[in-house]
Image 1: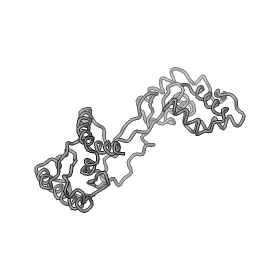
Image 2 (image 1 turned 135 degrees about the vertical axis):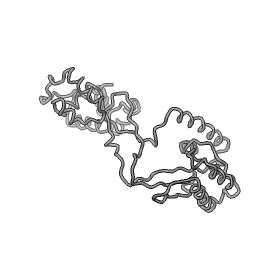
Image 3 (image 1 turned 180 degrees about the vertical axis):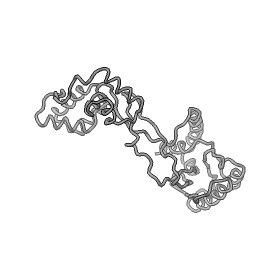
Image 4 (image 1 turned 60 degrees about the vertical axis):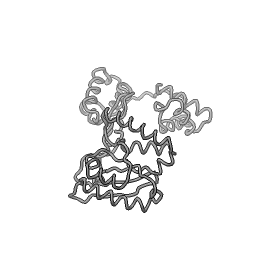
Length: 290
C-alpha cells in the first residue's frame, strides 16, 4: 500500500477518535510489516490535531525536481549494489547532490531501506539444516511420548567464547536492501584474541556447571573427560532426583566429544548419549513445554 493511502487510514482513525496506540494496533493487524511505524502515526496525529486536512506531501522549494533523472537514479542504484554499507553522505558527495535528495531517491524511487544484520549463532549449510531437522524430529518424538520424564532427564552441554572486546553493533552492520529483501545475516561474534572459552552444562531447570578454560590451554579428550567428572559431582548435588534415573546426555559432535576417552567416560558415568542436534532441539522442547 502507498504511503498516501496509509495516511488516509490514519486520518480515518483520527476522525473516529481512536488513540495512537489503537490506530497502530489496527494497522499492524491488517498490514503486518508493511504498516507505518508508531512514530509516523504520532506525526500525522499531531498534524491533524494542528488543523491539517490534506494527506498529501507539501511542496518543498528546496527540492529541485530536475535533479532526479534516470541517470542519477541508476548511478545511485549501482553504487548501493556495489557496497550495501555505503553511507548516504558518501553517495551524495560522489553524485554531487544533497543528502536529502539521496534519501528521497533511495526511498521513493528505489524503494530501499537500511537494515541491521540479524544475529544468528552461525551460518549453516543446507546439509547442516537438513541434519538438524531430522534429529530434532527424533528427539521431539521421544519428548512427546513422556514430556515430564524427558525434561527431567535431559541435560545438554555446549562451549562458547566470551569476548573481551565489543563486536560490531547492529547499527554498524546496517545495509541498504530493496523492498521484499530479507535483512542480512552475520555470525554473532567475530574472531578476537581477547576471549576465554566457557563450557556450560544445563537442563530445563537451569545451569548445572560452568567451566572456564585457563589461558594457554586447549580442550582435549583428557581435559573434557575430567570436566565430565567435575560436572557429574555438581549434577548429583543439584539434581538429586536423577540419582536413580539415567541421564539423557546431549552434546555436539566436536572431536573431543566423540573421541575414545570421552566415550569411555560417558559410558562409565552411565549416561545415555542422544544424537547430535545442538541446542536448537533443547529450545524447541522448552517452548513446547511452556
